[in-house]
Amino acid sequence: MPVIVPNNLPACSQLAKENIHVIEESRATSQDIRPLKLLILNLMPTKVETETQLIRVLSHSPLQIDVTFVYTKTYQSKTTPPQHLKNFYTTFDQVKDTYFDGMIITGAPVEHLDFTTVAYWDELESMMAWSKIHVYSTLHICWGAQAGLFHHYGVKKIALDEKMSGIYLHETCEQNHPLLRGFNDVFDAPHSRYTTISRDDVKGHEELDVLAKTTTGDLYLIAAKNLRQVFLTGHPEYDTETLNKEFVRDVDKGINPAAPVNYFTDGDENLPIRNTWRAHATLLFTNWIHQIYQDVPYEIGKISEIGAD
Image (tube, rainbow, N blue to C red):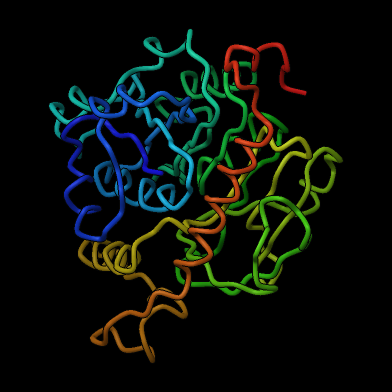
């Protein structure tokens, strides 16, 4: 089944070329089934690219997914045309009385800032608190994962000596977990961040499970036991070329970054890049969507009766 997207969303044309099935809202309204309602808080500066990436990894489920994009009212993107936000996004105020089966909070390039000094932090905290009653399961990605762990559990981020960028080998920690159905014992996934979190800090919360980590011990996938909150420190949704674009951007800025590890074919920036993480990304997002479908009440308003616990 397809993902439902706003009419004329730019991602549609690119996804159609990849034979990925999406349908626009006007057509979906004629179908007599209840799709899963998914809210995406897109904090990335490359909003159109991120929309395409997320819809791509969500589209492999046989379930119909109705996507709503939301942006922060307290901070206006400098890299996304205002008309795009007007056409395809809404604000938190416009959805706060609505219930959603799932929510995604993306990463954001603000890792160098303390959480409380981020321009939209108060608004984000309001949304994360709201999600505990109005959303059945929230998936936090990269900086969004660190922000969520800090808000919900007080887990602090830790600055790395240098940027963690590249394709890293991971291992599963709980093979029979619902989010890990079908996983290999080891798998690749991209990371792109300047901060990390301590495993000891996470282990101090018995309600959290560490589901996967890099083979060097860096935490990757963490989830509350009831799956109402899921935290993903990497970027499995990234396209094949995304890390290269970030690398070139940082070179152009004069940052003098190290090349992403295990990313360029044979270490040669001129050779075609081989994608080794696409299958894992598809499976992870599909597992998350399917588990929501299994657990969420058919009458979506009853999410509030379940509560955060």
